[in-house]
Length: 177
Image 1 (spheres, rainbow, N blue to C red):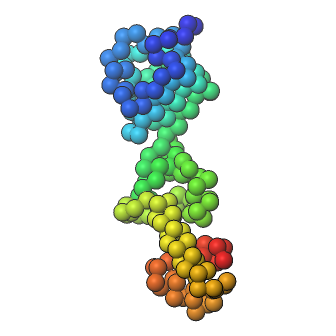
Image 2 (spheres, rainbow, N blue to C red; image 1 turned 180 degrees about the vertical axis):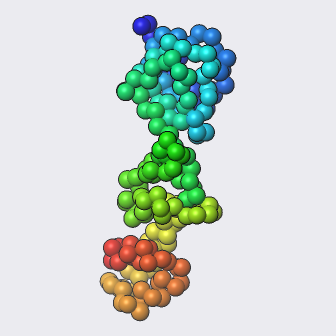
């Protein structure tokens, strides 16, 4: 099937409106980005058939029946959860794992969907952890200037209280020493 030059090797993620009424969607579309933040976004005409997608990012995009999504494409579903982070979701719209699982692991955040807060956070969980780490860097910078090479249990309690740190944050504190 011929490569559709008009729609191949382009990004339509932020401007999919023109696709909905396109009449020349045919052939093979290669290497284009169509990913949307809205789950199951209908950006293609419902009547589109016979199009083959190869090496495309089709995350969160609904592909009408009669078209082919090659395994070389990304065609995952994701949604923002109450921790204000995007998670891959299953067919029942339930979170499976965070999109940036490596970041969660690096920040020692749970990647278990059962640990997503019941109510929405005000600040994303990864941003909150990064802010806490930044505060800890300031604390340790001050301790080093004062000539303290280590922190006693009494200092840990003081640091925890002063900076409103959780037990998980205190694990990071100990690792930074």
